[in-house]
Image 1 (tube, rainbow, N blue to C red):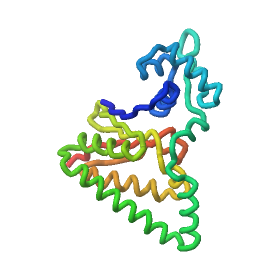
Image 2: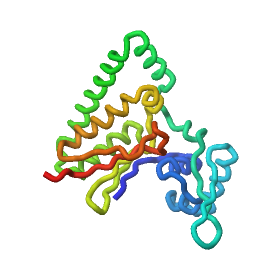
Image 3: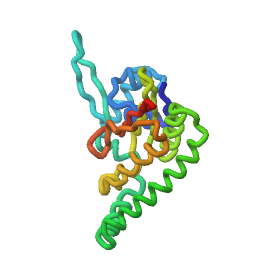
Image 4: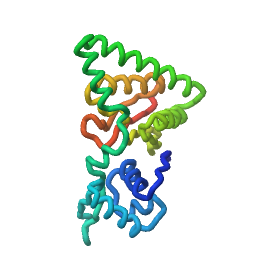
Length: 216
């Protein structure tokens, strides 16, 4: 099962959002995601390519013509918001330089504690890990992380964040990423194991977390 919440407005925005959420796709796959034809999607992709927002690549898959897949360019990635990026990075630099790394750690820890408290309240009524993961994905989507989740065949879960609205801050100070992982582990409880398997800051397309129950 996978839950995705998004509602872009124009056809071009919908195409960009589909590629952001799902990675490289063929024009037919884009059309299927958007409920339109592959040809209509191809026309939108061609226009976006002219604007430098998407790029096509070919992949050989057995016998026959190579499959053409489309993905976002760095210019398109930059269209998705990084909340007050320049100001945030500047402030982090000032704090580190003027007050020292200890002060920066205090700020990150304070933000972590506030976030953990909000999430714990939201997840308090969730009886099982599945419901907690679903609620956590909803919380993260509301904060701009474009999160979704799915349950695997073995009963484990995957939480995915297709966007990081504080990416510039996270690149400048990876304490934010450490704190995020600590928050997830805290709010999902001691009965859950949480491992980050993909990381935007490390060059991944998204951040992904493998979540599984720990045997008592």
